[in-house]
Length: 241
Ligand code: SF4
Image (cartoon, rainbow, N blue to C red; front, side):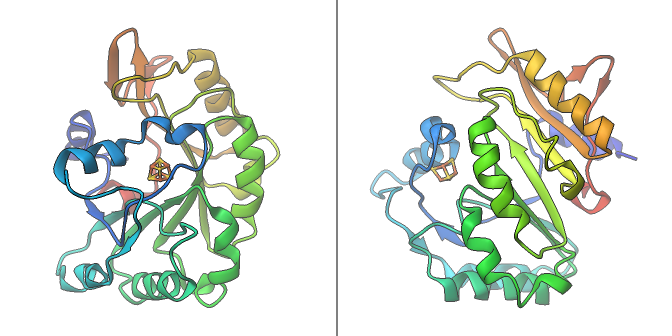
């Protein structure tokens, strides 16, 4: 059951409690990256830094340790970027497992790296919500099979920005959550409502949680929109803190 406090928070566009930037910078991987929100924020705040230069922020591995209360951390950028060494990814996953009073929401467009590195942690990984992003069917068919090789317990798909129809029919039994949303910001591309409906219908049919984050209606970007008479805000309880 979604709390009123969480509902109010997502109306302001705050979906996850705290960001955790373990890697600074990233480079484009597929069409979804064209209007990368993080890259735009980076240029806004750090005019002298180059977003394409990858920097490991090992000092941030201590941030969750210092938090006394239980938190949900959204791990920003792409921890599995080609330039991030294996040992650093292992350190980051180890830190998450050891600090298991918190939940970690980790998304990557490079899931092919995960299964080689997560074996050590997979059994204890019930506080890591691991997902890949697919903006269209081509990326879904490329990335979901790679994600599913991982032994991590909770696997999800983010279809944001949704740039084409995406069917999860072939993968539904292994996915627990699908997040969906239109593109935000300048130069946004269209998300057709029929693509969203079809994906939602597949999730409902296969008992996969469906979280409709935002939807563009004309010029307006509606957070947590109503689709067919209700909001679609299905999430594991821990992620709603
Ligand atoms: S993978 Fe993510 S963070 Fe990296 S450029 Fe693409 S959208 Fe930006």
